[in-house]
Length: 101
Image (cartoon, rainbow, N blue to C red):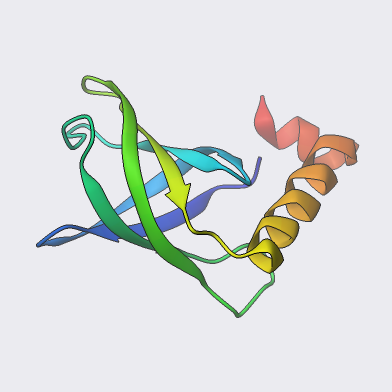
């Protein structure tokens, strides 16, 4: 998977990297994950796409010092499809497979 940056906030804006992405959520790499159940706003761009995906998410899992899993809430069908297409391209493109290892 190509590296994607995500901006997220509760009160203070933070930047981190997405380690895993799906149409239902993402795993965000951060040494200081928010507590389980925290609701936050997020914003990120898919590769070569100027239109941001943004909305609200909830922390559904934490891995201390590693990061947190976010579940997207209310993500539009259009954004779900955009994510699904990008993830499918990563899955089937052998040049991108090399970047994942």
